[in-house]
Image (cartoon, rainbow, N blue to C red):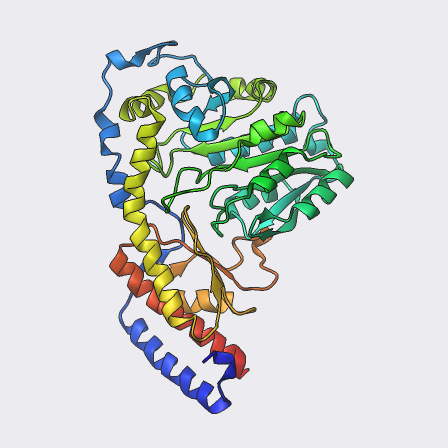
Length: 423
């Protein structure tokens, strides 16, 4: 029986029971964290061999001595390894440091200070607008907020972001300069963009010649299913429409090997990479080529070995996602309070509470010892207009810790929903 159908007397009894159970959890002194999508220690252990897989001789590669300066755009052996991951050719890959967020920040910064491919620097313009599919990745929004862009919410659908709205805004308003995208297992919803959505992105006709798609393909190989859908290459779709300079793709091995010591990749047209190199060549002489070679040796230079490695990650992650979803279904589905995604990959479950309850749920969880990502974090400026979205990150806790945390979470959802109905 759904909670909204309870009589006032039944609702008060239900709430009293929840409060008593909640007091019991508070007395346990829990300290559990589901706030970020961090790999667990067991996942990091999968890459322990990365620490001792190279020798001094391995540092003499195709492009010279990798212990020395030079080879700014990355070693050719690593470009060949990672190109299939991005769906591009090796010469369309630029390898940077350990985090793709750095590459995204650098690209936005370059657009603001010097302009992209000879266009007016964004910092000299009266207004810069950026499209933000929501719910989305909070750190994307922090970058554009930091630079002062006006961020515009774009609703997500089961096929990806609302393309009708995107096409209209991009084609009619030259101050719209970019869009954030996580096309495979979108953060936090887990949505995979449909082939049609990718094709429509490639065929955009922007009013601004320096409009750019920031294609953050962070979870492109993080599958939790047997037959994952592989989306078309965005660079190829753009190229078909004469738009090959319109997209910049990003990814990294941060959640493949070591979170703090992965390899970041950027893929784009040669013209785009040549333009960005103007700034990068002033920023550094080279990135960590020894780490790039470590990854080449660890995976024996073969992308198929990366895919096999990711199956080991899946074996660790899948039971955790199943735990989260099983508890949500068992405890909340009969009451018809809240809805949630059931992702086929990625790192998150997106939960929508009854409208106006997300902040209260996060607060209740925190007071009882379970930390969640802040309510509203998945929206620009940290403001969820309906105060309902909560991002659940199952990766770091153990299954037993997750069970405890999720039991408390669903209890807090029940309490917040009952409070709203009683009010």
